[in-house]
Amino acid sequence: MFGYIRPLKSEMKVKEFEQFQAAYCGLCHALKKKYGIVGRFVLNYDFTFLFILLSCETGVVESGRRRCIASPLRKKCYCCGNTVLDDAADKSIILTYWRLKDCIADESFLKSLLPRAGKMLLHMAYKKAKHNVPEFDDVVEQKLKVLSEIEQSKTASLDIPADQFAGILASAAAGRSDSLEKERTIFQLLYHVGRFIYILDAADDLHDDFLSGSYNPIAERFGLKEGKLDKDTLEYIRTTLTHSMQIIGADYELLPRGVWSPILENIIYLGMPFVCDKVLKGEWKTKKKIDK
Image (tube, rainbow, N blue to C red):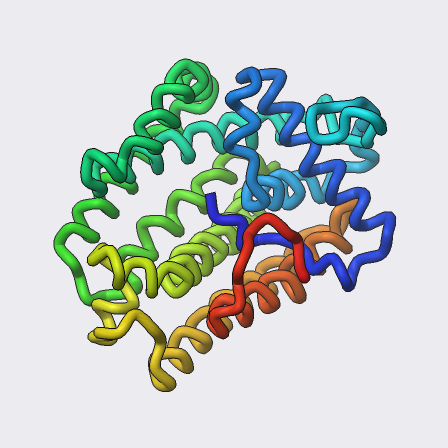
């Protein structure tokens, strides 16, 4: 996955960071429990954010302590016994599987060997996840198919392909709220999170896509020939991403507060702007650290 939706660790209290780690570890253990070791390979920050967002209204979240492959000597706290966590695990598997399939279709045989191996490893897990959340699987399949057709046509629009990907993440919250108004708010919030991810990823991949000759919506939209953002394009991309972040913040303010609110506020108001700035400056060197 992408890993752009994450907190800014330097601005978190110790207990908040430990709480975020418990959510991240909880998703990891849920993936392992439901899908075996292969499930852990799809662990990502973006679906950790989804779990936290959809769990925000709940009271005390059940937790436990255990060792794992990432921490064999010291027991670490992790969230458990949560239906939202299981749902996030299922949807992580489905989206990863379809993205691997999409990569296979877009790449040459040699370049697609790694995605092919990943798809084979995830096949049984995908079938199980599809059984658990068939509606989400249908949405992902349909929207990624349309997105692939749009990208193959090399459309010069930035919003048309971004809309398809944004719809995938927005659909991940379907049926998870107790009121229609709240579901609409979360839908729009996640739609703009998805839009943010797609456009930021295009900016992050601009140079690599230039070298490989792959489609990049930003390059097509602005006619970029050198694999880098010029001044005017940079300003446009920063403005449109800031617009999405503002809508995300406005939607978040309409939601009830809960035990996860400080972490969500860190991610939305600090983490996302931080990652956005680093990517647009060409300083996003690794997606494995929460921040430098």
